[in-house]
Length: 114
Image (cartoon, rainbow, N blue to C red):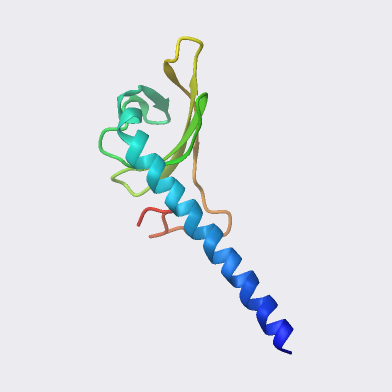
């Protein structure tokens, strides 16, 4: 029984540490690179614009690609993908809007911004 309890606690601890680690990486990437993506022109269903008024989080960042989550003033969330070209200039690639798969997503903003 003691081994089972230790195994369950280890699984829970591993999950919590992984989750907190992903939040820490997201916050680090946002603090380090977030403002840069506000200056890149994007085009989505709203037309061509910049991410000026949105709350943004940099979910993933590497030397050749980035994934940025943005929440607009209307409380809808979108994920924007960027690519770095051969001259080290970042370009907007495409976007995905976050939709609910099972009913209403009122007052739910995925994954980190509240």
